[in-house]
Amino acid sequence: MEKTSQQLRILREFLKGRKLTFNSARDISGSNYPIKRISELKENGYPIQDTWVEKTDKPRYKKYWIEKEDIKSIKEE
Image (tube, rainbow, N blue to C red; front, side):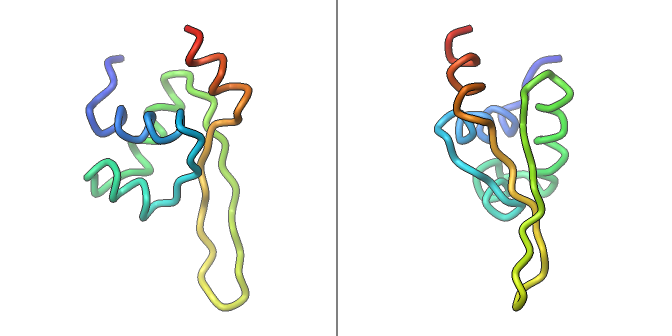
């Protein structure tokens, strides 16, 4: 499957080592559905990790990233 420009914008940030949230991915990609774009990248084989972040005074949210070792492997391809 070919990557869309929204996916590419998100992927570029991951390859810079950034961790993204819904809001940051939305701002970067311009997509109203940034989590769908991240899911599509996962379906295309990118090893995107995620975890829930919980703070006592705020609603929980997810952070997404690619591990440094995986970034290196992707860049070498």
